[in-house]
Length: 187
Image (cartoon, rainbow, N blue to C red; front, top):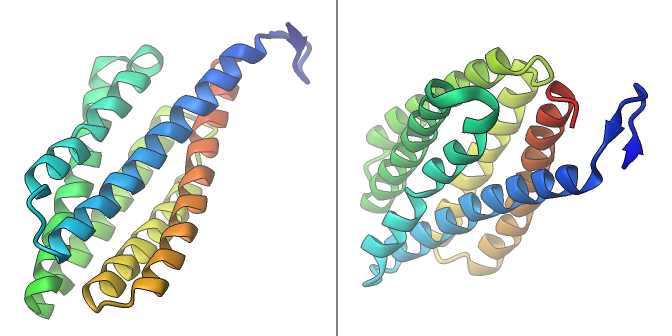
């Protein structure tokens, strides 16, 4: 046990576990999104299984948020993150088909969904800033769309480099999420 800056006892194991849990969830989020992009771009036979696994990610997040925020908030986040993934899937498929009007519409909905996620998260934790979540989510969307575009246009080296940036940014979101929970619940 250690003492936090406020003088309260802190169990470092709880903090490390929380940080690792959210890092794993955000890593899985971007990795399975990448797998979906690759499977879609290359018409791979694993697309249905990859999609199913990707869509488990919102439930996994909800299960980790539930002890802190209750069932309603967990379900709300699960629904918002599921929408995030479904919109992304439509965007990738429309881009693959060359339907740029649909891509534009998907992009608009995707950013609106990011705003909803930022609003929601900032409403349940005073240490999560709407503006900060919005900035991180917008960056995530921009990089993910860039990753998909590079993959769909066979720019594989650039696609891989983009994924490295996505992964680093996902870890920042994970740490921000975990730190907010630790502050709010004095962990």
